[in-house]
Length: 543
Image 1 (cartoon, helix red, strand yellow):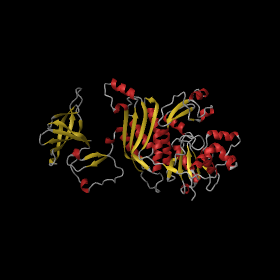
Image 2 (cartoon, rainbow, N blue to C red; image 1 turned 90 degrees about the vertical axis):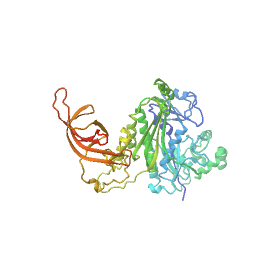
Image 3 (cartoon, one colour; image 1 turned 180 degrees about the vertical axis):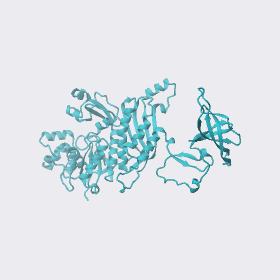
Image 4 (cartoon, rainbow, N blue to C red; image 1 turned 60 degrees about the vertical axis):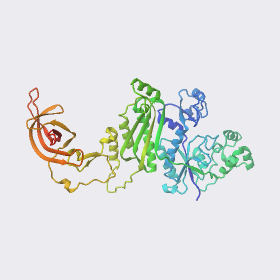
């Protein structure tokens, strides 16, 4: 079987990364910072990428910032690190693994995504490769695969060009310089219509070939082999192989991370949560696409928002507090009641949590991490309904409520085996995977009438007697009537606090107000008397 490799080129990747983290109006230029190098002075730095608007104004890659500013006075210049670019390519590679077994950001031997002199690999880190040998028919052929792939990459916020060929370098050249689609299987010379700049040769060599009238690779292939070797020097062997359609460079496999994370740094501090929500919306969109491509969902969201350390330290000093880790970074954790993967579901939970947070200093970045990842639920299609039921509707609602009021206040009321009313139930975390619990038949048996609303803790009201006045929440009531309900004698005797109580239903009426308003029945109260001390307690209300 003939080898088939897809190349996905992102020609505007650096500019797109800038626009994802900040709003930019007007022409844009980007400086890509090499790993391990300090930041060059802005005036002497060279532009590594420009957007279409800057290109129309005459700004080109390789120009110094001062030269570009002379052509476009309102040019915005931003920095992007190679780590950010490689992380973005990694996200594309994760999506690519849906269509083939091996994705790569580099070719074996370090070829491909590097700063090269020209041709293949000219742009720094802009290509993802995918081995699609024997897999394209699963999605309807190579053309359908390319279309689906470009659509999915578009959901990440990137414009992409893609091609499939017999080797990675040929596919990359076709994607960058040709049209989407690539070569057909068995085609011997797919590079012939492309310009000589598409070959892995030095820019000066390509310029010389154009000056002597050799504009396309087909023109170069018509020359004698000896003449080609003399003009290309050390590039001759690779170029001759590529012109014959031979490209056997292996891919260096990409390994997806176990924990998904998105991180963005701001060049200027952010003082409110609205810009952070704008950035988070893009983050959740990209993470949702990655989760869907991996067939996974997440049950926990971790957000870290680092502050400007100098301002945070000064404000802590003004408040008389010691500067600790919480003074320099805001950390938010959201535990989801059930695993979720949709963009809207994740964003609603994050928005509810972040809107209640307070920034103690300007934020200089934000990191969103999905720390608990599990397999996504597989829901069988329901052919008996006219409208499909969204299985994540309830989990999404519970996630939003958990972020809004706290996970400890959202759950399922579990019935416990206890004689004491306050211990007969408790709030448990919602487990949507567990089957619904069924009540035992004896639990449905008739018993003494019980209150409809229990207090969190029994409220002391003193001695209980007919006609006695008791005070509840600042309001005085008179016990007008009492009716005995049940007795607990040494219940849970094996514990340190066994209960011996007499329960009764009490009818309370409010004491006459100073204005002379008539007394009225306030409510039916559920009270008990501790048989050990004789003190009375309000347990709940019957409404």
